[in-house]
Length: 268
Ligand SMILES: NC(=O)c1ccc[n+]([C@@H]2O[C@H](COP(=O)([O-])OP(=O)(O)OC[C@H]3O[C@@H](n4cnc5c(N)ncnc54)[C@H](OP(=O)(O)O)[C@@H]3O)[C@@H](O)[C@H]2O)c1
Figure 1 (cartoon, rainbow, N blue to C red):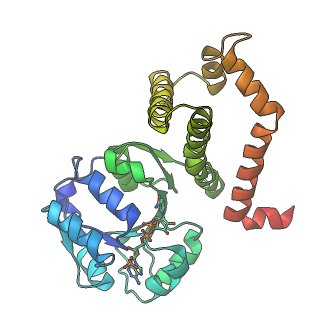
Figure 2 (figure 1 turned 90 degrees about the vertical axis):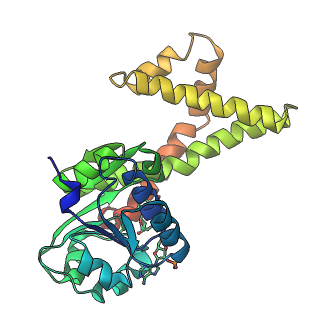
Figure 3 (figure 1 turned 135 degrees about the vertical axis):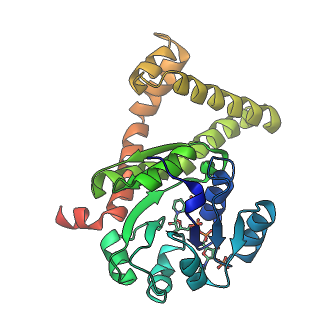
């Protein structure tokens, strides 16, 4: 969809980590001239973004964001979203995109109290550098255009698919946790931490590059291509799986999904 950034004002209710990443990214794209209005909290982030970008301004409060913007992003924490949203007066013509985890659209719609156009998205911090994937549900042309500019937008038709992508995003800490374990082991064996960190960073960055170069290859093919028969890589993966590593990861993802979709675990 062709969206004219000049004809749209985007407002953010909640100016924290994820708003900072999204606004920083947008200001590097064709949406760089789009007027953006931020709620004043966090004050330091709002001031930083407004200071760095001429198209970004700070509203008097969250209601002022809604009064000035047509496209409204909700980016406060789940614990306070009901209190924040129910205190605001939305217009029926508002287009609302929620970043808030664990808050179904039906609940948000009820708190908003107007028949606004509403969808959800899970941008990740790397959108600041126009990297990574953003899950969107339900499909929304404006959200797709914005998040495609910020990296890769993945639109899904069902809430369950969206929840599955959110569960997958819970792997971020473990990714770095694996790097930390490997670097820690190398250091424990006598390598300097500096050399260990540098080596592990570059190893994973090379693997990321290899995966990007071959988007059509399955992960199983990539495993094969990076594991000589009878070699060391094959041995580590086999040991990891035999010791329950794969099952532990799947179990952890099951537990994440149960938190995201308690209705499914209640049924089983
Ligand atoms: N971080 C991520 O990677 C990520 C990814 C996808 C989705 N999300 C979702 O995005 C939402 C925001 O996450 P975040 O990581 O950006 O959280 P965050 O850094 O804690 O940001 C939330 C912001 O809301 C502000 N705030 C608090 N009370 C407010 C109020 N009454 N009105 C307006 N703003 C208020 C806070 O300001 P003060 O600091 O002044 O209290 C803070 O700046 C969450 O629902 C989260 O689930 C996050």
